[in-house]
Length: 279
Image (cartoon, rainbow, N blue to C red):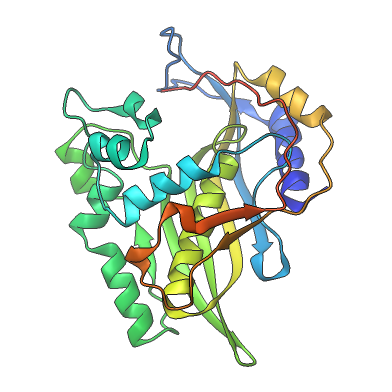
């Protein structure tokens, strides 16, 4: 069993055994029913990417290409446009969170990145002084939230740190998430931000080091308990997944494309499970 699968099963068991049910829940299922969840608070995981540990489960297939395209939409295009996400990347699931008839998700995610020139500032800070301790990406913007409706960001903060070990420079990353759907989004979000870590490391010609993942509210929705027990019954395949970015060192961050990423040695258990999303 991979480290990610072990953590996955441990968290599922903990939510089912020790979790409490949400109250005054905001999300709804497509049938209009309130989407309650069972949750725990304060989940933490650490992966050493330099040693081959990678935060993706093998207990069900994880759609990495669409997830990486979403990441590029946020941090390269710096956009909230659903038309751009569809036309450029052929990704459609964000349509569920369209604000009114605007064809946007409101002043969220990429719009906040663009507003504050976040990526440009982070890259400049790391270039000027890789050892500084102020490399914080924050998508939590009260002014933007007041300016428009829209889903508040779940994975809202990333912190970056540089370490030198011998002649090698490693980039570490910490992802903080306010809320996370354990069965559907957990490994998608983790994998996305490892991809972002890889992109920034490649920009400077560094190696990727450790990835730290903290989630405040980790939950399973009340229509997913059957799938949770199914995942607990599955046995990991004998594979050791790793995300590789196939571009030369010092490739410009904005020149990296979705097809440059490759998930190697990934043989997830099938069939895929079906989940009714909470919107």
